[in-house]
View (tube, one colour):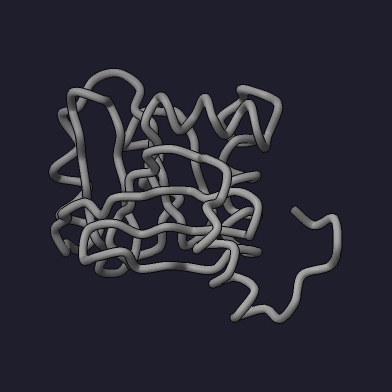
Amino acid sequence: MLLTRHAEERLVKRLSRKRKLERVYSELWSFLDRSSKIEVNENVVIFTDGRKSLVCARLECEMLTLDEIKRRVENLRGTYRCVFPDKRLAMETVPAKFLIRIPEGVYCFYLNKEKKSLYVGTGRPLLAITLRPAKRGEREKVRETKGPLKRGSF
């Protein structure tokens, strides 16, 4: 999952409390583990734990082998925000150096040169747009899937 600046600021403020990239993604993945997924339409997904909701948009990607991905990024200069959700790996580094840590296989590849972000993973990438308080309908859906929430859990 890639983050907009706004979503990153919201995650820092509401979840991680620190700006370090590894800490932000660590808190994001723990939030996703305890959340329910709501498919709004084919392009928008909401993850909610009953108190907070993370609104995400699906991004288009290409399915490529690791060797093809390495060929695509070999001429990139500068550091990029690189994400590999299969191993929960997120770091700001040179893409060629990042790809050394990824095992061989076929992956969904997304690169944004303007924002300097790279995604490599088995699933389609998501762009986190914002983290906001959960709406009533979202809280009710969580209640249906997880059973009644304890008093004070909101």
